Amino acid sequence: MKSIFRAILTALLLFCALPLRAETVHLTMPSGIQGRAAYHAGRPGQGAVLLLHGFLQTGDFSTLRQLYDGLAEAGYTVLAPTLTLGVPDRKESLDCDSLHLNEVGDEVAEVQAWFQWLARHGTGPIYVLGHSYGARLMVIWASGHPDDRVRGLLAVSLIGSQPSGPRLDALRRRIRRLPPTQLVREPLSFCRRYTAPAAAYLGYLRWDDRRMLGAVAHLRIPLDVVLGGADPNLRRHWPARLDGAGARVTILPKASHFMNGLHQFALLDWVLDRLHGTTRS
Image (cartoon, rainbow, N blue to C red; front, side, top):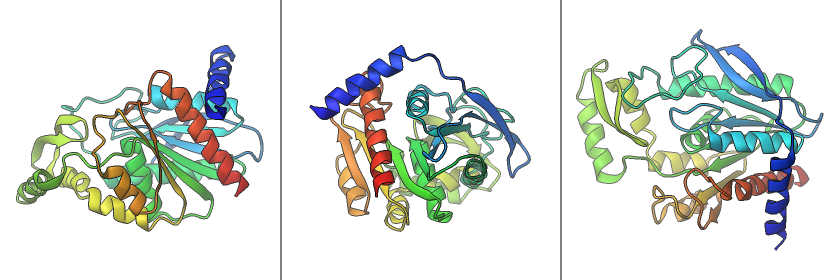
């Protein structure tokens, strides 16, 4: 009953509040390309949250935007960057069939650059939160960049790799036989035909379920995962595997992959509970 009341109260606050003023900040990425992010300065000492969008999306994607507004209303400093994916000052999502020259390492470097920016401009503890592929990338980043300033990682719709299983193994063997610069058009995440050089594409395939769960198991920060029970991408045993690797897993029974509709309020409620709990500990 308490959580239902909080969700209703959160909804009323969001609908009744005036639109939040988001500042656009720019930062030169390690690649030399200019990146952009939405930034809100919260109450001093309350804490800062770095939000990361899903595959080929932007920091203004609806799932993230609801969280951005809700966290800002709650007094947190919030930074929501848009990964450049090789496009300077990118403002729009990219199509699967576009030519993608970026690699996982490029994305991790951009997350690190934005984290350092937030560490310089925010006050209080820092939390990181990613949605879908953004959640996977946050795990990849945190596993390679342990930092005592990070108090927790919140992963929304952290699903398993796609493709997966024997199909993934066969695809990986075939791509390895190709010249590194040869273009491939193969499935990746929600894309049926993702276009990229073989070497770049193979970098994404390397982060399969086994490697991802290994990274989860060795994280030095708490990992909280929330999954939508109605997410068609959620495989049956994936929550248990995450739990076995040390993640604290919550399932919203009727929520979709994007946590849209009324579930956006339950999602914000979950996030605020985790942030408050981490602060108390």
